[in-house]
Image 1 (spheres, rainbow, N blue to C red):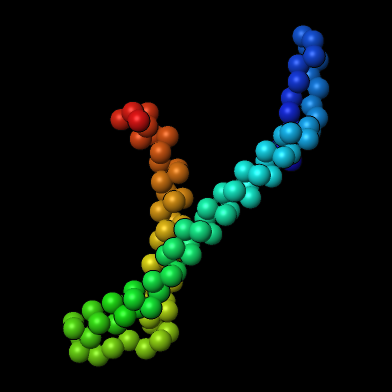
Image 2: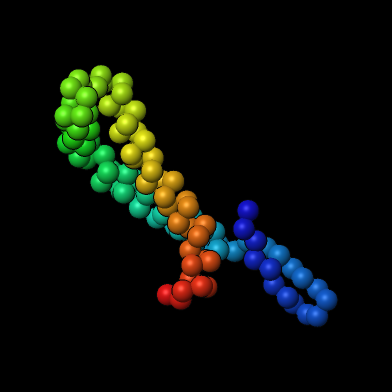
Length: 102
């Protein structure tokens, strides 16, 4: 759990949770999960079009279409790249900002 550290006097450290700290932590967690869910919904809404694009591309290259399992696998990989890209970007941003600036 998050704890707030207060220095009462030199040499003494007191830690306790405050209601405002818990409220901010809860709201931040809830807000960020809502944004992530919204972004996944935005990616999922054109699922039929993306799968159709994949199928048409494979048909034009190979002459045969994909079965439903292969289309779902390719689409799932496409959607998961969003989360993986966010992870990699969040790990790299500190170094990039330090090197190139904002």
